[in-house]
Length: 517
Image (cartoon, rainbow, N blue to C red; front, side, top):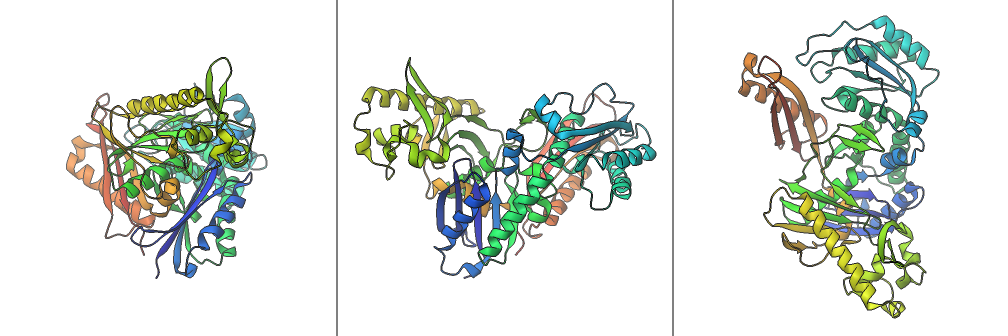
């Protein structure tokens, strides 16, 4: 047997791992507690799942979905200090870089920042010539004070020339190995949001290198010689060599892995998905097998960005959520997290959790000792489980775009909390291996490429523009590792720019394909 894949996903409560064959059949699966230093949990999960495989040498690919970058931003830990260079003067002097950032995060991340002459109009016409001397001076003055530089240019999706030239100049001043993040590789239209995403990306470079090194060492210690990848927040893959350059693109990959895994395990391409972990529940919707992407700007750690993220609603509801009955029922949002295996009452601990409630209500099996819940008031159980049912129903209704009933796929270690029937839901499904859907989603993920550009339909014609966009997206997917013979277009969005002349239209195209063997 050959062509096996290892999928690993690190959640806030559990680290899951699976091994699947070339057809997507799960051969082995495990769920271990996430450790305070997540690499330890990854090592335990990999060792446990490989112990179930007859021939580990048959593995040739390994995929990791991790919360490292997200946690670094949220917790304000291990972030690099970044120099910020904007190529846009005189058009954007009114708003300085990081102006709307939370003060505590700004103080940690933002180093020297400057706006220099440069940038483009929406159609690629230069606003001003790039001030190369100013770029050189910025590089020379910033390099001793920061760990990386983030470069953003007005309308760089229309023309990347000035950003590329700025990178060349910075390499000459700071050294060829000095980290520089360019905004056109990270975000899309919208200067401030794209700039924010680029700064965050630059601040995560050291975190990313540590994650990649830890994953590689884990695989090496396990005796595996495999291609390795990290999952992105759109449900696709990037090679680890790219992941340590663009770590911000992995933010939000956990829920996406779960949704992709749910789709494949249930055999449904259009459905609601709820991923219930130990601390929180995420509800999203599948469209053609992929999570519907958010059309709104996404905040990460209080910073407004515009990179690709799934459209999700999250709530503090999980197996470890703490239940209190003082002046009325209170559930969460605090949670015992991965300590549920020792803190929950049914495990001999002192804390009443939703896992205890689920066990008492007959929804959870094979976890803890029901006898330890003999003193639990039945009315409290009913009230708490009713709260869960109401909250899940509201989340599903908020996520739907119409009143049409859709199936709901329940996944994650806390999926036992989901009721068997809900208003507006045609059926509730718990597919095989649903508790490790996130790791399964990572294991079966594909490579992708996308473009987000402004075209002139009046000049070149709509069909020619769309053909060019499709080809660019397909080429990007192939460069990312997709099989050139099996690339498919999964998304085409046209947004007419009626407020500007020339028949301009913003075109977004995404291409996806299985990894080349």
